[in-house]
Length: 166
Image (cartoon, rainbow, N blue to C red; front, side, top):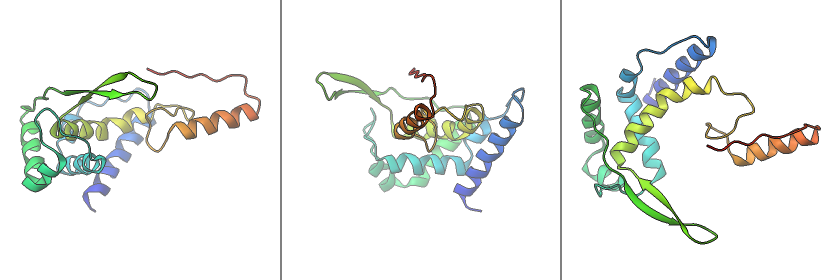
């Protein structure tokens, strides 16, 4: 079983455990975050997004050139020893389509890997509690699917639509 498959198995196990009972509590998740397979999967996802460098100036290519295993080993050791500290973010103003700008914080690549590892571990637990009609920020769901669901429900004479954006 390769690393991605092991991560999927972990996620499936966490999802099923959470789904079986609303009273289930997870007391030991931190050790899952610094698992080698979870960190490698997090790195794969971060790398595929091709984001900009953070405040440290390190880009995806810089990390690839230095050796990907170096960063994974470093993060794993720091997380395991509970010594990892998040860096400051780089603030960039992004132009809006209708004029003006909005602030966007760009985290370091290392922070993105750790945050993605956390997401990999906790997402299936929360996913188990979502209603089927929820679309926001969920895996394999997006705005187009939400619009189609609303269209279908209204066509079947639904009496209302609720939209909440936090």
